[in-house]
Length: 467
Image (tube, rainbow, N blue to C red; front, side, top):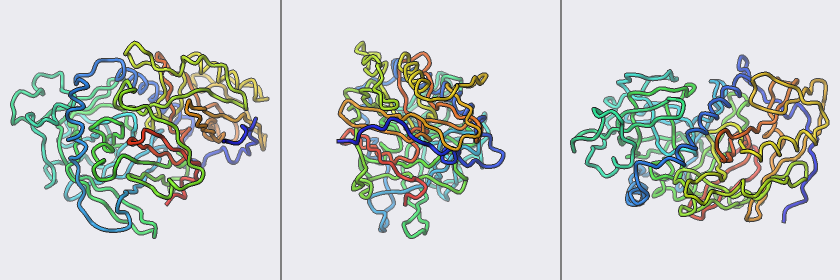
């Protein structure tokens, strides 16, 4: 049984103000990230509601084969059975996402990829890059790698990717390279060749030494035409539930579990977060680890997203009077509604009328006068200059299985101006009844995805200290 919910949290402002790299304006970063979130929500909504090119039976047909394709080059050390990698904040590049440090090919070439539990396809920019966005570092050159292999059109795996609408790029001949095409709601897109390559992940050992793990035959998109705003990253590492995601491809090696612990996104650039494939026994034995259920494959309207089942929202000890149907998936087969957890979204979003009820509950319980900020997505905001500590209501999510997830105030309040203005880091989901738990709310929790037992674990932790 959980402890009684506190009515409020006394928060010293110095705990709320994140340390930000000089020249990196937090209000600009979060505004850019929020705008990208809004576009991302359109993408997520469209993926759920639009009919996919591949039928469910086709997905199931190839899922088992795809999940066992990736192989690791064996070596024995204390990391056997799990893989730990380093994540870095994209805040210094104007991004509200987290990047994973990855090496690709033979010899290995460095790429930064956005960590995304809300998508499946792994892809990054490749030479020759005919139409590409700006990234940190050089494009990957498949001709310079001895481990690169194209997937041909006759390969069954080619049927799992989205074909290009351009007839000249479609599969017409069996010996042709397998083309892929992926478009986003804002016009951002990636087009190229679906291929296999060796991925090398940098590891940090408990003794502080560095090592690496090689995983061969990972399926990915080698993008030659790419447009969009990815803030310096070379592409995306997909960690969704679908068969093409990096996590699904590695199930034969590390099982059905992965976890991450996200340090404050506005921490000093020397602070890193951790990502772990496989079973983390230390986390599983942690006394503060809690679990809530994930919807199973048959219950989920989309094979990509990780769905949770909310029962109620609590603000300042009060269970809010939000209509229960807000949290339910629609029964008309459209898959609308429900709640997903998403590492690629920065803010947390609630649909109407849940958002309005949550916002009014905060305004009622905070004994400060809200201030208006022009063209800013967050509301309410408060002038807190001169206050050494303020009272902010507690915020928590109760799930239908009895689990409770309480959050520290620094996860749901954002510094618009350091030491001056704070804003509620929760916004309204536009044009869709979907609820999205973003990465700001997940900070300093070790989050475990267990797709075999259909559960999500969460444990409060100082993520910059995880080893």
